[in-house]
Image (cartoon, rainbow, N blue to C red):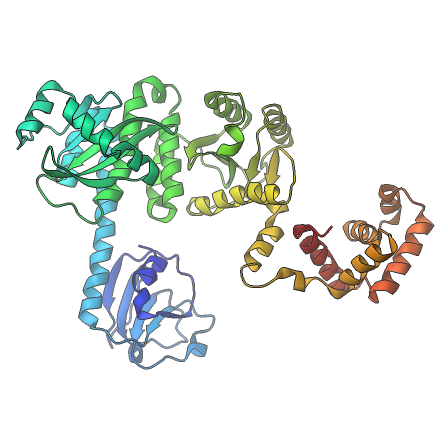
Length: 512
C-alpha cells in the first residue's frame, strides 16, 4: 500500500510531512517505534512518539508516523527519512490495528489476484476459473453471455432456493429473471458505473454483485457473484472487476490469443493503467512470461473516442494497422480511447520512418492522436497516458489542427492551465509585451510578430528577414523600434526568457 494512500486514509488526523516528501514508497507492514530501535526497513511504517525519532544525521530510508511534541522540521531537511506527524489525539493501539488491517486487506487482494491469474495460465478453461473463483471469494460465481445462457458456474454448490435450482437445471436465466433485470435496468447501471453494482435479487432472495465482461470495449456477457455462503466484504467489488477481465481473456483465448496474445497484452496494459503501483510487479513479470520484449523507454499513444468514432475505418483495422506501423507495441481500448504502449531502446526511440507512416495513416483516416514524453518505469504509465490525453485536449482548446500532438509541445500550456486554478495568468505577461501589443493596436503595426520571430531564431537575422519577407535593414530598424517601445534590452538572458514565456501565455489566452 503506497504511503500516499495511507495518508489519505488518515486524512482526519491532519497529517504533516517532513524530511523526504516522496509518498510513493510501498508500505508492507507496520511496527511500533521503540527506544532500542536500531534497524529500519524501507517498506515498514514505524508508529511512535516524536521523542523516539532517530537522529537527523542518520541516513535512513524509512517512514515514521509520530505524535506528541512537534519535531524540528529543519533538522530533517534533505534527509531520506519520511516523517509523518499529527498533533491530533488518538489511541495508538487502535491506529496501529486500523493500519495493519488495511495492509492485510491489500495483501489479500493481491494474493487473490495472483491465484486467479495463475488459474488462467493453467489453460484448464472457464469452468476451472469459476471453481477457483469460488475458493477466492467464498461465494458462488456465475458467468452468463448476452443471451442469458450460463457459460460456467461454481461446481458443487447446492442452490438453496427453488428458483436457483430451476435456472441451474435449464442452464439459462429464466424469463422472470430476465424481466426483473430489464425492469430494474441492471445492465445499464453496470455500464454507467463501469464497475460492479450491488443489489438484492428478490427472486433469489440473495444479494448480488454483477459486472460486465467486455472485449475491446464490447460487452459480451456478465459475471455474477452470489451472497450465499458469507456476507460480501469491502474489497469483493474491486476483486470481481478484476475477475471479469480475466474471464474476458478466457472467452477469447481460442479464437484470438493463440494467434498473437493480443488480449493478454490488453488485459495487463489495462491493469497497469488502472492501478500501476499495486500491479507493477505482476504486470512486468507477466509481460515477460508471455514473451513481450520490454525495452528501456516507453511511450504512450492515445486516440480518444471522439476521433475514431468519426472515421469510417473499423476499429479492428485501425488497431491492426497501428500495430503494424509501431512494432513491439501493445494496445487496449481503455476509457473509450485507443491506448498504445510503445517500447523502444533509448538510442533509437520512435524512428523518423515510423513517425512519417504514423502521420500519414492518421491523416488518411482523419484521426487525432496524442503522444506522451518517454518514460522508463511502468509504474508511471497512467501519468504518461494522461499526458498524451492532455496534448489532444489542449490542441482542441487552442484550435490547433494536426494528426498527432506531442505533449512536449504543450507542457507549458499545461502548466498555464494548472496556474489558472490559482491566478489569472494574464498578470504574468511582461509589461513590455503589453506595451508592444497596445502599440500595434493603436498604430496598425505588427511588431509583436516580429519580436516572436526574433525570439524563435535569436542571432539569425537573415532567416528572420526571409520568414517575414523583409530586408535585413528593415528588420534591424524594427528591432530598434521595438526596444524603444518596450524600454527593454531584449537580448538579456532573464528578459529574453520572460518575453518567450509571455508570448506563450498570450498565445494560450488567444491574445495573438
